[in-house]
Amino acid sequence: MSAYLFVNIEITDPVGFDEYRKAVSPTIAAHGGRYLTRGGPTEVLEGDWQPRRVVILEFPDVGRLKAWYNSAEYRPLIDVRKRTSITDMVIVEGV
Image: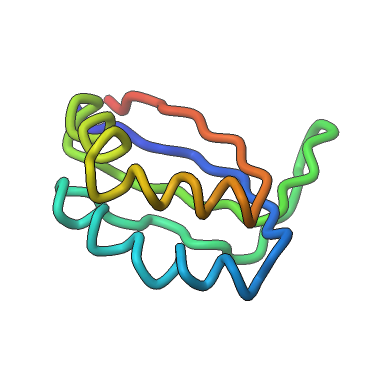
């Protein structure tokens, strides 16, 4: 069953975040993931949520998603992302 990672990210250090942006895509692809959205325009239809930059990733399953997140390749990038942005992440299983 597919798994999706929904990310709401506010970039606080654009120059520093470029290091993350340049390095993250190959780590995602290596674990079978792909981008569905990567920060396009958003429009709130209901509620109070004020999304910043929405990124949605698709992985073959939750196991592969978590393997990517916990991988040796991605682990150092987590520190870069946390230093240069404010991020919320949620895993959702598909049907």
